[in-house]
Every structure is written in C-alpha cells, then in structure tokens.
Image (cartoon, rainbow, N blue to C red; front, side, top):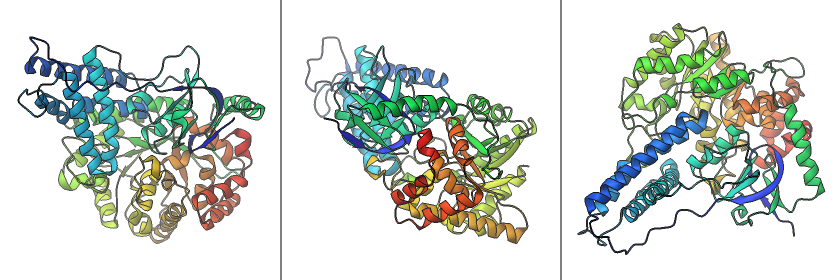
Length: 571
C-alpha cells in the first residue's frame, strides 16, 4: 500500500526512483579489550594524532576540489578533525591509570567525541548543531584507525534517491548528482547543511519528513521537492509528473540575464557566491551581478588572519567575473556556526546571540578595518561596481559607524544586512546612514521566530512565509522609502537569503518593495520565468494577501493559487 510522507521542500523537482538508505554508521569500539603486548599509551596517542591529520588532509583535499557552500562545509569539518578538544581528550583517556582502565586508540576517540558532542549540545543553538559534525569526524577518525573506508554515500551502479535521518556535512558536500537524483531526510531543517547544499547542487530535496529513514532499501518512491512530499509505490500520475518535470527543467536550465516583470519593470537577479570559481559559474549562468559575496572562505581553515594581499587576491577573483556590474560583498560573518580561533570566543553560552558579524569589531578591533582596506584595494584593480555591507547590524548607531569605516577605507557604497528584527523595525533610521539594505532572511526568520534555523523539529517556524517575517520585510522596505524621501537618495533593498530562490515568494518580495533578489545560480532561471508572468500591480496584490494571511501555510497557499505557472513548471 502506498504511503505518503510530508516534510519541508527545499529544492523543487519531481522524480521517481528507488531508495537507498545511508549505510549504518561506524560501529562503536568495545570498551573492554585486551591491549596487545608492545602497545603503549604513547604509541596509541601517536596513532590518534596521525589519523586525525589524515582525516583533516583528506577533507581539505576534497574542499580544494569543491566550490561554493560545499567547500565551506568541508573546510569547517576539516577544522573539526584537528579540534584539540577531541584529540587531546582522546589522548588523555589513554592513560592506563585513569578512569575505566586502558583503552585502544579507537575507544579513546569514541569516548572523547561523545564528550565533546555532549558539551556542544549543552551550549544550545548553533553549537548544538555542531555536535553532529563532531560525531561525523569521530567516525572518520575511527575508520582511519581501523584502515577502513570513511563512512559515506552508498555506492550504486544506477541512480537512486538517498534517504537518511540526516546527512553529515562532509557527505552532503560531495554528493554526485549523476548518481543521487534526490534527497529525503527525516531530520534536519530548511537551513541545515543538507538543505543548503541540496539547493547548491540543484537536487530535489525534502527534509524533516518523519519516517523516510525507515523506508526499505529498493522501494520505489516519488519525490516532489516543491511540495515537500514523498510517496511510495507511485502510480501513473506521479510517473507523468516526473517525466513532465524532466522536460520542463531543461527549459529552465538557462537564464537570459535580464529579469523583468510582465510590464517591463526590472528586478535584477543576482547570485550568492563565495569564491572566484563560484563567480565564474554564476556569470556563466547569466547572473546580473553578485548580491552576496561571502568572505568567510578566505578566513576558514586558518589559525591567523589572512593578509591584506591574500584577501585582495580572493576578492579580485570574484570582481574580475563581473566587470561594470554590481558585486555586493559582505564583511566577515564570523561567530555562531563559523567560529574563528583568532576572532571569536568558543565558550560563549549562546553564540547565535553573541559576538558575531559586525560585533567582532568590538572585541577584536582591526580585523574589519583591514578587510575594508583589502576590499578597496581589490576594487581599485577591477571594474566591478563594488558595494560593501556588514552583517548583524542592529541599530542606527552601528550603521553609522560601519558606513563611516567604509568611507574612510575609500569605499563609496556601504550598506547593512537586515537580519536582526530591530534593524527591520528601525530601517528608516538605519538607512539614514547606510546606502542600501540586504535582507538575510535565514537569520531574520530565526531571530523573529526564536527558532534555531538548523533544527528539524522547528522547521515549521523557520519558514520565511511566516506572517511576522513578511511584516518585518515590509517594515524594512517602508523604512527605506522613508529614508529615501528624507535624504533625497534612493535606498534599495535586496534579499540574499534563501527566500529569494522560492519563485512564489520572489513575487511576494517584489510586491513588498524589494528591488533585487540574490540566490544560488541554479535558481535564477526558474525565478525569472515566474516573475515574467506578473506585473508590479499583481505582485503588490499578492503581497497584500500574503501579509493578511494568518499563517505561513495560508500565505504560501494564497500566493501559489494565483501563480498557475508554478505547477506547470513544477516549482
């Protein structure tokens, strides 16, 4: 009998295929074993250090061959493999005089990993989410110690739909879309590593669909990534939908590079990138510029701050791909889930509400000023129209201070990320100082709904269609209009969060007053196709209806009901 599983759709697409479940994790080493003669605590400690370095090197090598979000995830996981808490904790447990008696290297790593993960869970928020990363790294080190392949994606000669409770970041980052045709998980959330990287790869994906990790291997299922639905034993209707999607998706493969509404109103579609390689791919996909250049990739996997020259080279590689086009660069968004040893404090009790983004300039002054100097130097070497913005701005005073820093560095266009509700509610004051705003809908939703964006059980709250979030976006756009009237200068508002990649929500965002949308290059064509079917008046009407809806689902359903193109294109 057919079963249906409902979750959160994170990437559109309709496919039929057979399920392969993620293989069982690395088995736990026995607690009580006889230590072979000649094996000492020192020799086991050396094995642990060597295995840790080998895992880190393997992950770094994979990161170097990967681009975009996947690269950042792999670099962060590589850092975790060398985490002194994990390695030193394991070495300490080898002391035969300690609690529990002598241990093998494998057992010591296992227990140390469990302790570190438990400590992170106790911190809550982003740090709790990193517990899964620690356990993934623990399994990789134990596998290395045993001389076995690292845990990972099943091997198959035929394409399949990958099912799991959730995926480790390093696994998700190296999925082969030629083999894995869709992802379904019972855990995770719309902003989990699995969801973010599925979008980057363009894989149809459904997360937080309880029970899909128990579907029997080999079962044929239908996945609708837009609707968030998984159906076992699909019938002719589902097969037809999958065939239609395969045809339609080919027509959405290319974006002409000039996004306009049906009445000719321009809505530039930009790309979110992190490296020069990403930028080249975005330019090839027709992106009209860059709406978010993440600078974290330049700082990750380092114990010290990169030099100005290193930063100039990294930023310049992106600027070079978009001559005479807008490139919006975000200053370092360190902290929370992106801790840096030379900049952030790993002992913060609640990192998501701690010293992150622009706030790091309070505790470690100088890093931001040097980054702005590097951005200005890179701009001077290229023809891109460079805009710079700071993350985690909460007040007009912070906006004024950052804008002044950017001006002092020689950067002419300085703006702010609106991720904190206070910035949205006081946008007219914030934009009295800043030249523009960019809505980071991922964090704005998290902070508005008081719901960790990484947690699967809170996926329904972490929905940018939430009426409260839509009202904050509207408040930002209204505040920008007020600031423009007061200053006599336009104050554009863009969106660079994942909300921009949802074609239905893109229409609503334009209706709320958003002027540009930035997303994964893979989403450009689909969003452009839908925007081309509505006028400004249509978008404003749908935005008003979404604002008046009592729930996220009602807002989404109302908008989609007036956009039949979505179902036709499978979006």
